[in-house]
Image (cartoon, rainbow, N blue to C red; front, side, top):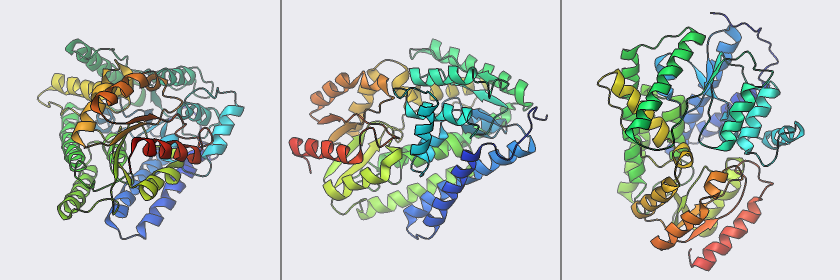
Length: 435
């Protein structure tokens, strides 16, 4: 099959710059012999390779798709379909020097500043032709209004009007009927991808991918358990986000990703055995209950460690309540994928359904990880979570654990500056007698 539109060298400039950015980071990390830096370098190398693959397929007119981590990427892998997430830039390259200019570009385009920055940027990159145009798009109509609005905007976008689009319909409640229904949605997604890419799904290949994927989630869960140690062996610099990138995005069901997790686990086991923490004097163990502040992470999280001895023991994307996939037959595989991608995936898990998920996850993490305080950053786009902040605060009160809602933009540091966040958190720590 050949793509109907002609490839133009000037297209998806930002995507190329992202690749170069990660290549630059990889080069820096390669010069640091520290094992943790080398683990991070492996993830950046894997990221660069995916970018290279997508650009190569775009230039050669081969099928590739845009999708989401919570739409069963095991299926993409089994169908041999390279894919990228249209929200990738805000999450992967948010610390790149061009991010703030892109946010301003989205605003100049007329995209409302009350809309989640990640969604605004994603639509801006499409409209400005800065991101590759896929053969087909797996959209997202959950977990939040902002994601749904992005899906609707892309579906009506003139630049991508010839791109076929499909979105799985998510049920609200967690029960067997919902799992059965969503498994049917994933089957419809497979039929859609087969029609528009020419790639067919082989059940035996899907089973192989799921077996390897199960291994990855098992290793990830073991790693997450090791972070319960006091002192915590790793801080914000390595852990959940990298595991998530490997398992749910770049190395889903691939042996290389499994080996990376084994290497991470071995490093962590050794540090726990030797009683080595991420900082010399751990004073505060906090649960960062959301995405990391990607746009200004290096200006804030290291400061928490250095100034307050505060270690991020767990965060939303590192929490691993994933269910193994039963690979006995086609029916059990699709139902297992349905549960994993509807109820287990981070952020989607908490924001899609009842507020009980927010409450239950806080209770489990606080108790399991000896947490001293819970930080809800309150990203301006996560209005679903902010609507539940009262519930989260009440749960923390019952647990006897201090809770703070900051109010910020995870990507735009001008919304609430790093200095303002430092001031809020410092006053919170002092008032609660922490540190």
